[in-house]
Image 1 (cartoon, rainbow, N blue to C red):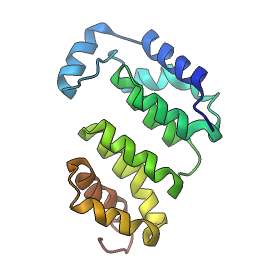
Image 2: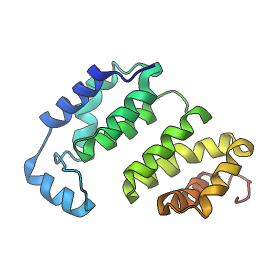
Image 3: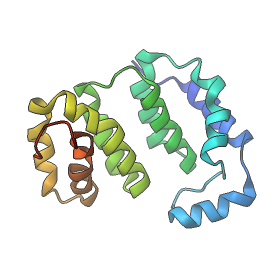
Image 4: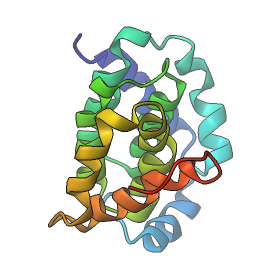
Length: 165
């Protein structure tokens, strides 16, 4: 299913309406972000996006989140894309290629840590035998963010009775 372009426009408009220019520059500096920031902190972002999420179609969420993330003009769009994935029905193994693409495109600790621990980690826990060979390839991957992911993805396993990869 193609990305929901109207939803992406609504997300951008909601974030822009919540923008705080006084926060934008320090936020960008803290994140060392190439992308500009609108200066929308998480509590304000959650509030601004509530009306938009009501229209989120589960069938379009993967491609819509992917398009929003890869076409982002501001860092808060990345966070909105991650939130969209979190609001979706249970992620499946079919989501792994998109999640890996976002890890590599985001390539910074805030994005990678969220994707690894909160999206990919539960998938590994639920589909250990299917996903373990893929995760093992990330351990010595050239991409340092995939190597980081190979470690963080296991955080959901602590106390689960499973062993490390």
